[in-house]
Image (cartoon, rainbow, N blue to C red; front, side):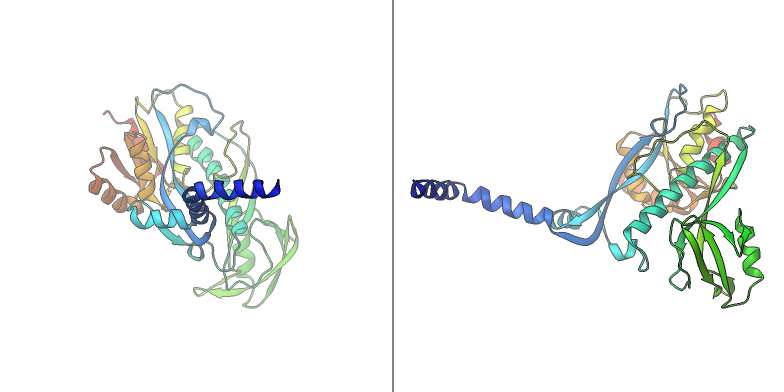
Length: 328
């Protein structure tokens, strides 16, 4: 009986040898992880799907994104022959003194900060009042030269027993210290410390901080855990701003774009503009807003591919609004 079963299994394997061998090759190509990321064109995300503001528009405001894969043998080989895919070493994306978890924490804090700055800028441009109830300071970057046990994601509450609610509060304390002095930092994760160091000729503690605002608003954002980063700030601001005025600025157009939004309304440089404009064109966008610093790269991609899309360089939020308001 066992011999019959054994012979039957042998025959099945023999009859399907090519299939089994092919399956094992494919399994190998997909399962072997490589120390790279693959960056590829993404798509667009309609802002109305991410913000709980419901109002009618003839067109739409759309964020753009980059598709990023953890490299395996299969997609690594594909990237080698696809001119719109690029290979990036993980060590160039994740800093030497950071973990992937640190990088993800920073990206989520920057997303939240960008969303809150979008609200503030939209209300300011619409000449509407919004109350800021509190500010929260979060560590988003730690220099490799820093002498501190702070972690990315720590919220700074006090330094040397003084409450801090702004970057100027921290700068004032640091300026009173000497190089190598130690400061005691109270965070939401316990008591930490840092030594004053010299960076670029200035006294620093070697960290970057993002500000989160607690505001009197009913606006709620609905981003997924795998969606992060600040590059949707400009487009999110435009969507919120348009909800606060009577005019429909979309005018039946699919408006896409990228760029961070800063507290003063300036539009900040982003990464991956090549993939974002490709994604916008693929989704039939009419306009693509791009930060001034990224314009030349985006223009090159547009010209090389003969893309039929309005490419608009902006430095300030006001420029984007004025462009949409003009008659077309």
